[in-house]
Amino acid sequence: MKTKLMLSCFLTALFISCSSNNEELPIEQPSLTVEVLDKGVPLESASVTLYLTKNLYPLDEAKPIATGITDESGKVIFDKNIEVYQKYTAKVEHISECKNNFFSLNNYYANENSKTVLGNRYKEHNTLTVNVLKSANITLRNTSPNLPGLNDVMYANIQKNGEGKLFLGVLAANKPILINDFPIEDKHLLKILHVRTGEEISLEHVSTGNCTSNTSYNVHQ
Image 1 (cartoon, one colour):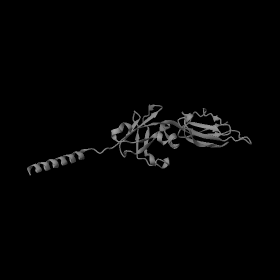
Image 2 (image 1 turned 120 degrees about the horizontal axis):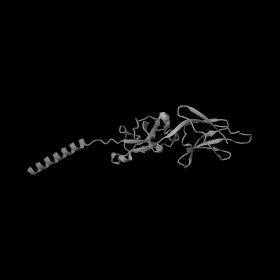
Image 3 (image 1 turned 45 degrees about the vertical axis):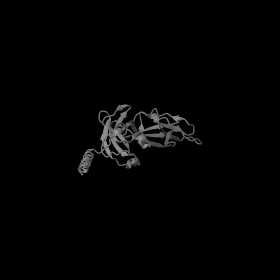
């Protein structure tokens, strides 16, 4: 009888101890670090807005779950409203320098700006690196002569890492096309092709512009 009583007391004490220890264990709160780079250099004071990737598009209607500003190391840490195994996308903007990642986001390259969060055991994985571009609002006008019987239509295509392309729009003769967030320092990401000849139209003269006003340029075959 005494042995059973001692065993019962031991099991009770063990249960209470385990319960107490469990109550003291902190609830895991994962975090996501967003690192912003400008040509490989950390970008300080950039505004970062975080979205659930599955709710991202249409971009102008997406509801952010968090916002923050990068520090001198180009990083900002989000540790609230972050859930394990959810995929997040960052929108980055440095207004005074017209630097952002809008070109890729607006053209549906969200995966380059997204990360799936894992638990804190793998927290070294939970860093999303976003590369920004200097952008400008540029209007291109096709000034090819469009002689009778000739087709001088041009296509604007976006190049993705040198692989494949995404159709952006048509430049009919004497018609303009507005390209928001034109990569003014990375024009190789955008190609204008003359449909009839297959010739690539040079954009080297498109050299200045900003994100707060519109700048117009002529292009022709």
